[in-house]
Length: 114
Length: 109
Image (cartoon, rainbow over all chains, first blue to last red):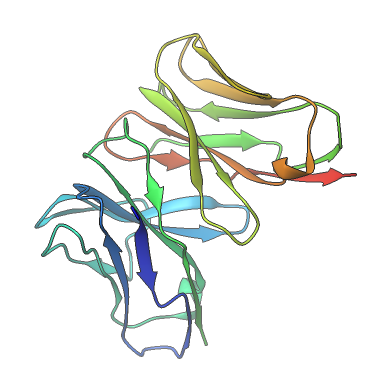
């Protein structure tokens, strides 16, 4: 089944404790991105990647890191999480880079930083 | 930067009635996409509009892209309980999609 998977689905952590949220897609998509969803703000893009070893900042990159060493994986790293990073995070992928392509979203990761 | 505004933020609809949600951009868009997110779920692609003035229909849903490619609308007729959820528009003129804040729809039976 074609899908985007994220792990973990739920995470409660404390300020300053490094964490990684994994994202994997099995559709051979080139383009992958991370979004955060907050009430009243919609989906805001954190980082995106147009292909292996090619990443760029989205609208809200501060406090986050990403890497794209393999085509299928695009982990999101929070080196020192803070309470303002409490949010619902979605990974998405599309066939090729660019906005003319349907985005396939993962199930989401709900992160709480205490 | 590019901003996409979406109104209304909430829409409470009587089952069987029609409603419209609107999306406006501060800049000209190359295309616009619409997504639906069911409660507790993830956004799912509905449709993409590319051409100026384009109109597309999916059963009871009608999508329009403005002549100036700066606004779009989603009109739902004869609302059903299955229409519950949040509808997002997403516009772009480069490699990044900018999402609106969404319209959350609830339906009174």
